[in-house]
Length: 255
Picture 1 (cartoon, rainbow, N blue to C red):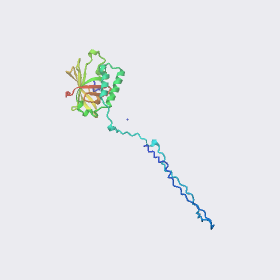
Picture 2 (tube, rainbow, N blue to C red):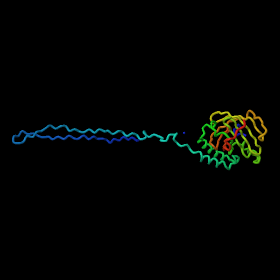
Picture 3 (cartoon, one colour):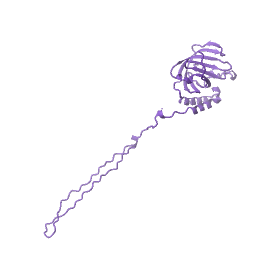
Picture 4 (cartoon, rainbow, N blue to C red):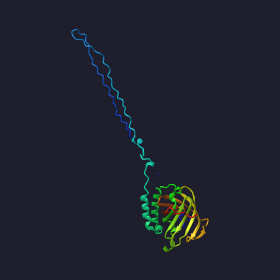
């Protein structure tokens, strides 16, 4: 039994060439003559023609790309997280015909793992070992562990249902099989971080009645990668995937 597996403006300033056209100054010129019988015409020297100067006030065009930046107007903390519900529905639909994983082909296993990873990416419980949601009795609905599925046995000798219970306050866990053998095993848990525990099995119970002390080598780790009110996803130290549903939140593991 190994649920607890041992085993990523454009400011184009374009001021049009403001040719400030300066007005031309025009002057009249008169000629003079000293004739007594003719009116005297006064002549003034020609003034130099003032050529207006055109001042180019246009600002050179700023390269567009220089001002282009990838600016997000929706900061990360304002982005709505993905909804886990459709991913859970996809996962449950995919595992339904697989007899808890016993009938899964390698392609099925790969597909289930991909969907599970999508669900893990939207895990709402970042620190499951500090959450009451972990407490209680869970039913195993899918695993890749052949030792739990007992695929080496004829179907009529395989456990029909497997359960796992965890109590965070006592750091105790228990794995249970249903008919035909009703075997059990209990374990102590040691947190390694907020979601991962080391597992030390202490007693097996044959047929749920006969206690046998577990060997010291019966150890492992369990990483809780997704947790909500009704579903849990865990991964063991041997790479196995476990998917469980909550069935009894009040269940207590024997101390």
